[in-house]
Image (cartoon, rainbow, N blue to C red):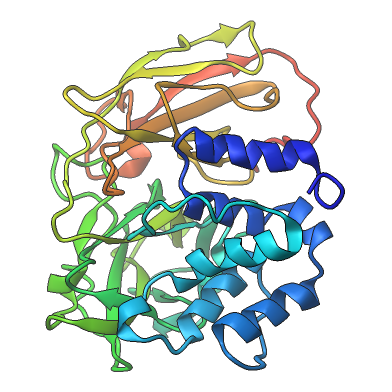
Length: 405
């Protein structure tokens, strides 16, 4: 292993597993790592997927290795008994044989939740397109190292934009094991909204966009929580296994906006699918500890919070950005944090940084996003009126961290 990929890299994954990390998240990290890319030629990797999963040659999409893994899984012909996550069990054994990566000894349960970080896995979404009233609209859809951000200039007269998921294949959905969907949308522009529709077993997309909202603005008590959607109910699923596709629908409710507000703007950070019917749907909210508002001497800073009361087995998601609503290339999100603090792995660029944290319970359900409050006479239904905790970094020369534009 040390000769092919590197002893330190190998030992870091073993340490993660020994510390309680899941095999699935470890495998995900390996498949998209630069070390694995360098050690395992692409033709060998795709050859393995073709032989072991698809039982024959296939034309794979030009996406990340982790997305190719998912694509193969979605196109495989499985028996009912081993329908879910067969590849999760097979890949480590193959790596053991060829690359001495001894992950097969760890046999935790395969996850029931499919998770997409849209800054890393935006290639899993199909292209955006207009459902109606798109004439004269200039659309920009960015992803990659940034968030999945959608901006449509001149978005007036009820412009509606759809983005389908997954770009290839379908989602295998067992109503006995799967029920919920959750997405974090840190920013919707003025009058803009986001909804969801479903295609079931190859049928047309359906769902009322005014009632199937997922932008989280449902009531004053949970306004900063990612909306928790009951897929089984909204899609009208009969008991059993189904093939699903979903469509995120972004639309403006400003039919005659002022000239300077003719923009549809939606920012999506992450998406979770498949939490079980018996999932605990509450995860609480974290309480702010520090760092204090104002200029800091330490760089990188230590972000600290208190866990929700009477909560066990939580992990946390931290989002950090130069933008007050978590838009743009300076935004990054860190998942699966253990404990109640986080220190960035490198110094931050100078300027003001905004951050938030939310708890994730053992069923994969996210709690409320920690916010400082609502500014002035702001509206709890308007995400652009929220204020988040911030700190200021004095002058710093850090390559790779540009200012938000």
